[in-house]
Image (cartoon, rainbow, N blue to C red; front, side, top):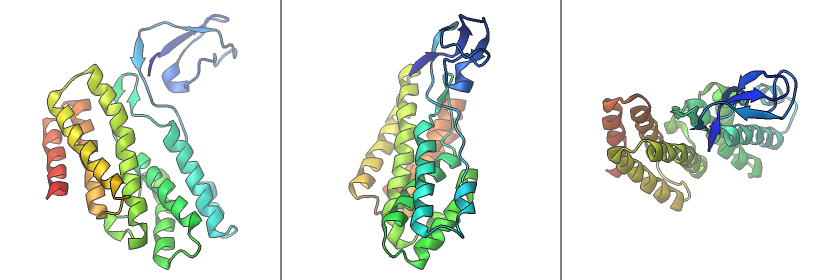
Length: 237
């Protein structure tokens, strides 16, 4: 959406940035009567904290199902509020968002599995340990039982990023980038049609392709466009 990012309170005259608060409420007096004082700019991101410390602190006290449910819910809330256009600038597809999306899917699968395998539990706890810092296990470590969850998680992260990337391309057209984005979309839909059950390395390649395409659009880095194409070629082989 497009918003007026700089607000002025009609009650007390204070000014603040909507981009920083995601609220039209005056931070000084609490009034909801404010006006935008600049042009409308595309903005989809919101300030949101992602902290899994309380979940990790409950590991010795709660059953696995409750731990996984809590992790999934916290990750879902973070992912729901995140966006990739901030005040008109395209952001990167960062590892914290990808890790949160993966944990949301993996934790949900763990929570509804009656008897998770040791491999599933180990992978879940490894992901839980560092997801809020953007750390996640190598795709080669994904247990076979979690391949569909992993694949769907990567596609969900790519789809979320592509929504804002396409909006950016509407504002600043680039035929070459749009064509490559279309190839990413086609692969994403194919993997989704397979319920995510593909080689995790292929799903991860699509994340890298989307990230590098964003780098090209955000910074004009021509080499990132070439790299994105190479990632896709690896999937297409």
